[in-house]
Length: 533
Ligand code: B12
Ligand code: SF4
Image 1 (cartoon, rainbow, N blue to C red):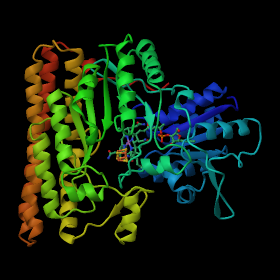
Image 2 (image 1 turned 30 degrees about the horizontal axis):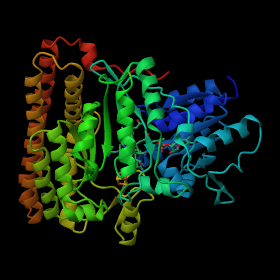
Image 3 (image 1 turned 180 degrees about the horizontal axis):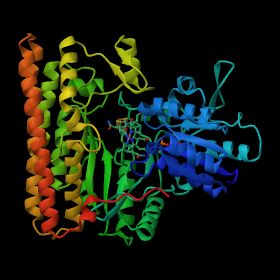
Image 4 (image 1 turned 120 degrees about the vertical axis):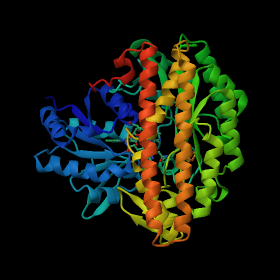
């Protein structure tokens, strides 16, 4: 095929917007672009790359834990005779370029931070048969050391970027098409566990930039008209609500939406901080289709919020949830039961907090430990304290005491099938909750909807109840270790399994009963994901 082809290898659960933007910029300049799903397997990727014979391969390493897999992929491509330049981009390669280059010996260079302009210039150099090593914004190894070209400033005007290309428009719920979209990039806060602030503050330029509301509406309208999208998942790190200027942006956005043909016909989701949830603006957002908010709550006790540098109080978190509930906006929340400050007592405080916010079954709680991602304050704090351990795929740290450590290990084993992976019980309950939102907005008259809501809520409540009980009941055995405890802990584990299976079966039966009697065709309920093209 033509030497103007650029191949990306990327994870795409929903459209990968980073790659979408890079692709649009390249396509506008005459390049052909193809995205290969990282999950297709090395052989399929190799075969397609051979057919394409691309000018350049770009790896989207947006999740640090996939780095070793990408390193193996690079080795596989090189071992099988692929010779074109291979580069990588994303948070981890940008923040840890030297280590990343060493971990992926077949990689030629890294595109640091925002990649649109840098990748375009590299691709143009390659197309013209010229040297790409002087292009600003890259890093590569030379004579055993790392060579950095000057950092490229962040894109000053997001409106000037073409709309991102989307390959996986197969995302849908009950036949209603959904897609991800970004109205802004960056966040001025500095939560210790989050790599976003670092990523957007190292290169010159403002840490947060917002597109104009008109530009966002135009993209939404195109997706609405041409692709039939009705659900918009805003993936902004923190939706525009923080400052007065941000809120003015949102009011203006709502105004534009109100004047568009999408008025009353769409639903959307955002992510934000608890201290941004104010009744007046959220009422207006709800009336304009906001159906779902992902809140960065993270911890239910002040020590945890402090170590995570959230600059939020427990009271603010509780208030935000209360406001969303009173407005009828569904929520899910980032929450880390364990964090670097964890002790048995603090984890139990978290459990009490969880009961307060979702004991009613409004959302299924997750089981997580804050991870020290590369380039974050948390990583350097843990390193300084001598607590850092693990590796790039699983960065980790030790807790302050042995008992908490052992308890966490036990709970990990118990909760693994509850919360990990797309088929876990938590994922199924989240999906059922999302379906309820979609039903409310698009199928409000479906027969039996109220009863279905009650049942799903009850099962979510029961999941949360059992979850909290497992944590509470097991805590005592780790607080006062004794060889005889093993038997009791095994008992809790097997009871937990029985409960999990029961909830899972009940949920499947409930969905089947409701959707069958409400007359939804099976293929609509199962959902279908289009193959990327
Ligand atoms: C949407 C999203 C998701 C989606 C998936 C998106 C998809 N593609 O399918 C979902 C919800 C599934 C998800 C899940 C998770 N996510 Co997430 N997610 C995001 C989020 C909010 C937005 C991504 C995005 O669209 N960014 C906007 C685009 C424009 O920026 P970008 O991706 O960085 O791309 C630019 C540059 O990085 C660069 N670039 C990127 N790739 C490449 C490749 C090449 C070749 C080049 C040249 C340049 C380049 O150029 C791009 C354009 O300027 C980011 C936060 C963020 N701001 O990135 C977190 C983020 C990527 N997620 C994160 C995490 C931790 C997770 C989870 C582990 C959470 C969890 N506990 O479950 C899971 C992991 C899922 C998995 N499969 O393992 C972390 C990653 C941290 C890290 N260092 O690894 C981030 C950074 C959030 C954070 N607060 O720290 N996530
Ligand atoms: S966790 Fe949220 S609020 Fe904190 S820095 Fe990251 S995006 Fe901003």
